[in-house]
Length: 135
Length: 298
Image 1 (tube, one colour):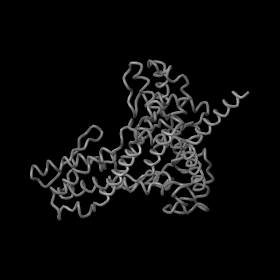
Image 2 (cartoon, each protein chain N blue to C red; image 1 turned 45 degrees about the vertical axis):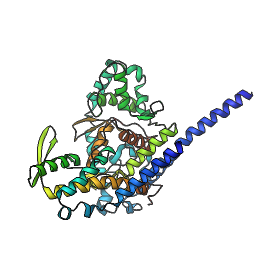
Image 3 (spheres, helix red, strand yellow; image 1 turned 90 degrees about the vertical axis):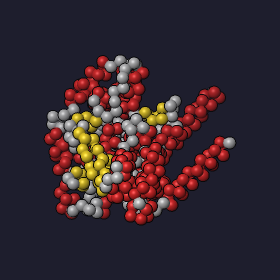
Image 4 (cartoon, chains in turn cyan, brown; image 1 turned 30 degrees about the horizontal axis):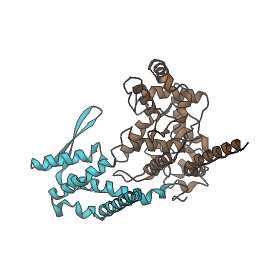
């Protein structure tokens, strides 16, 4: 029984890894080709998984989840500029991004965080002296 | 006689098994020592190829050569001449002395600490520990917090303040006695935690697509602006650390969080399994090195 559970879990992991690796971020996250809504939906689908696995990307103090929230608000308000609030040393600063650019990046960040983790399974040992790293 | 033989055989089996659990970790540690000793044997000459982006003149003028294992306890100050000179000036009047005094006072004052850590110096050497009951790694910060809460107090936090001061007192005691880091991997589960920490360290993460080793193994010694990157070997010896950037003392958990943030990833919580396992791996790599904390870093 235990073996069966382990096998099912391993299969599920493999299928998840296969699915996420099939995504081509360049085309999937292309706002011009797919539109903001569709690309945003991809970001919203994958970023929570990245958060759950502790892999969420963060750039210039902005978590990808915060960026996604701000993009959603911008789309709702039918504006073209995304404003994200960033807390730094007790002060709140506003960062502004163009909607297309922010959406594309949020999508790429969400998917790549997960893909990078799958890739790491086969690449991390290449950095270890005495193992995969030769000098 | 037969009983004695059985007991001895059983004891040897247990010892052998315990030794088995850290076999891979020991190999990793020894390989790492070998790597760093070779890398810093002669940066301007024989080991030049380890520093592809560093200027000849800089390698000649600013790098100390012929480093051995224990030298790396000083981090980048073991090889960066200019930084070492500045460091020596700073520790003429150590900025963390008040923290050690405060830590000693808190150790006497906070209920339960004396019972949980009867030998503060030893505590500084043997954490992080693997708790076979909870099947998880407990860092020194975690152990102090657990102890305080168990005795009816409020957790002291994870990054700075009282908890860092108490750790400073523990580390200072260990340093005074010349004690060394002595992290153990006592079971299969502990081995798994170590391997998870190792993977976390060497796996690429964040939007910058770096792993920790890019800077602190392969990149150790190279410069990022004016700072020489520190080596993984000896990373755990000098905590809690007084960072000039922080203008205060911080725990290993605090430093890990900052480093991961710099890699472009939201850092894991200081008491998360990721952080604990990472600290377990990191500390094991410094096993056998003298405790040198608290100390100053930029």
